[in-house]
Length: 196
Image (tube, rainbow, N blue to C red; front, side, top):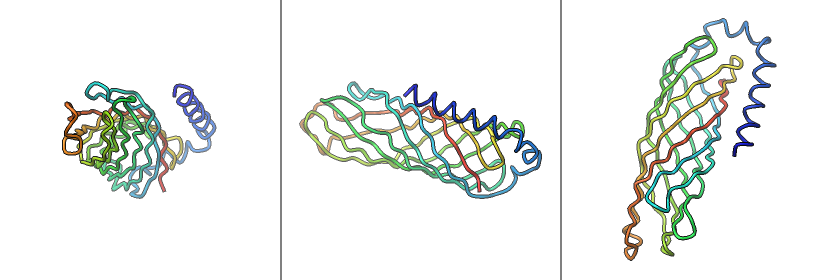
């Protein structure tokens, strides 16, 4: 994963430096006020803090789409692949989708900080000591990040998000002693965003 993050960071840096001079003038205009749709994607590190066997570290992939009402406020949705985690005795595979309100505070024409809060709807396929099943639920999440405008339309983001998920498999695995897993999914990622 470290090599992947290094590669993405290198490509982003090259893009930023090559585009800096040609796009500098366009960033001097109040384009941040323009409403509109944006799309993007994040790749990063996922830390699963759960009960016992459900502690793990994985890669996470996220695709997103949003609408900016102005420079300060946006609505954003995403699809997330949290991947597989656990071990041979207890493991799970979780995917989800989100809806959030995103607030942004521009610091300069290029840099801004942002925070988001919303709802995660997720579905987990699990195997606990041979008892398999599927469980879906909804959870709240919060996140914060820093964005850098490479050009008027292209941004790079660094973000940290915490999802509060509670997996309760009691109804499908009554013979397993501990099937209630209070699990926090912590995501640190870098991503790109394109504004139309």
